[in-house]
Image (tube, rainbow over all chains, first blue to last red; front, side, top):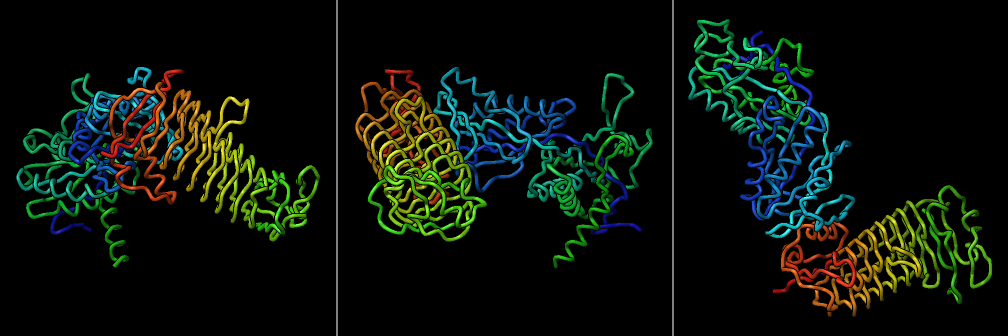
Amino acid sequence: MTHSINGVEIEDTFAEAFGMWGSRVIITAVNRKWAREAASKMTGFATSVIRCHCEGAIELDLKQTPDGRPGVSVLFFGFSKDSLAQQLIDRIGQCVLTCPTTACFNGLDAGDKVSVGGQLRFFGDGYQSSKVIAGCRYWRIPVMEGEFLVEDKFGVQPAVAGGNFLILGSDPGVTLQAAELAVEAMQHVPGVIMPFPGGIVRSGSKVGSRYKFLKASTNDAFCPSLRGVADTDLPEGVNSVLEIVINGLDVQSIEKATCEGIQAACIPGIRRISAGNYGGNLGKFKFYLQKIMEETRRNDRTDA
Amino acid sequence: MTVLTLKSQLQAPLEAGVIVPDRFAGNSVAAVAGMPVTYGNEAACLGDFFKVAGAGSTEIVLEGDLGRVKNIAAGMTRGKITVHGDAGMHLGSEMRGGVINVYGNVGDWAGSEMKGGKIHIHGNAGHGLGGAYRGSRRGMNRGMIIVEGNAGNEAGAVMRRGLIVVAGNAGDFAGAFMIAGTLMVFGKLGIRAGAGLLRGTLVTFNQPELLPTFCYDCSYSPSFLKLILRDLRLQGLSISEEYITGCYRRYSGDFNRLGKGEILVYDQR
C-alpha cells in the first residue's frame, strides 16, 4: 500500500539514529536579543559530531526562566558524558560568560550530572563565590561588566541523534520551501533540535569513502547530478534533495518532530519523502516513516 | 497527624526535646503521652501537660501558648511541625530536615546550628536566630529560616551555609562573624552588622550604619539575588518587583578579617 500526504509519497523506509548524551542549557540575558546572541555563538560550528565534537542548536525561546529574564534553551549532544561536559565548559566559557548581561542555568533534571560552573569558576581567580539556592549550587564569577552567574552542575542523559528525513523535490526552489516549512513546524516541538544551518542539510552523507582517510562522503544515491553515473535512489522528476536531521532528548520527541515536519513538507512540487539509513546495521534506533505518520493520524483521530 | 494541646499555662520552662517527628512516628497515643520531659527541675511526662490526640506521626500540630516550651523539634530530620501560638527557646536547633511553621513568636536560638530543613516563623524571633551556641565554631549550616516579623541580636552569627530571611528589623550584630551563607533583612539593621564577616552575603533594603572596615565597590544587579527573591515569592513572601530587577550597592569586608564577605544594600535611586 502506498502512503501519501497531499499526493506526496511517503516511502516505506526508516531513518537510522544513534545513541548520544544530551544536555539542555538555559541562557538568560537583559533582553532576548542578547540571550539569542550568546546562544547562537555557543551553537556555532556544532552541526555534526564527526568534525565538531558535538551537535547543538537553539531549542526554544522561553517564557519562564530561573531568574525571570528573557531566555532561550539550547540542546547539546555528544558521544560521551565527558566529551559533552568538555564542550559545555568550552562553549559556555567562550560564548556565554563573555556575552554581556547573560547568566547560564542547567535545564535538564537528569540523574547524571557533569561539572560545568564548577570548572568555569576558576576564571574568577580566587574572587569567585558560590551560593546554594533552592538546593542548587551557583557560581558567581566577577567580570568587568558585573557578575556572571552559572550553575555548578548540568544534567546529562542518554539521548538520540541522527533522526532524519529527506525531501525529494522537482526543483531546488520548492524543495527549499518545503524544508523551511518543515523546520518551522518542528521548531515548536520541545526536546528536539535540527543542528544544521537553518535546520536543513543539503549534503547528506553515506558512511565511508573511496578515500581511506574520510569517514563519510557525499550520499551519491541521492545526488541528482549523479543520476547517470552512480546507482541512484531518485525517482523520475526529482532534481533536488534536502535533509532534515533531528536530535532529541528521547525517541518520542523525535517521532513527533518527524511527523510535524513531514506533514508540513508535503506541498505541491515535492515528489517523495524518504529517509537516510545505513541498512539498519549501525544505529540503535530506527524511525519508520510510514509507521510514525500512521500512529500520529490514529492519535489525532482519537483526540478528535 | 498528632495534635498536642497545652492543658494549662506553664509556670516554669518545659524541656520538651521529645516533640520531634522522628520520636513520634509509629508510637501510640499512650506512648507519646508517656515520653519524658523536664518541667523546671522535675522529671515529668508529656501527657502531664498536653492533651494528645492521634497516634504518633511525622506530622505534629501544637496548640496553645508554648512560649515556655523549649527544644521543640530540636534535631528533627523529617516531617512537619506546626505551632499555633508562641514557641520557646531552641526551636528547631540542630535540625537536619523537615518543615516547621510557627504562627506566633519564638524565643532565642531558633534554628541555631541547624543543618537542613526549613523554619517559617510568622511572628518575631528572639536572639541568636540561626546562630552558633557559645563556644561553637559555626552556626546554621544549610537550610532556610524565614521570619515574617523582627529578629533579635546576632541573627545568623557565625553562619556557615543556608539562608535566613527577616521581613522586619534585625537587632545588633546581624551576620556577625558569618563564614558563608546569606542573611537578608528587609527592615532595618542594628549596629555592627556584618562585624567580622569572613565570606557570605548580608542583604538589606535600608542603608545601614556600616563599620569602617567595609569598602564600597559598585552598584549593580546581581543575578543570584533574583533567584533568591523569586524563590522567596514561591515561599509565600510578598517581594516587590523593584527588589528583583533593581540595583544594589555592594560593600565588601570585613577587612578586619578575610574581607571576602559582602553587604548588598538596595539602591533606591
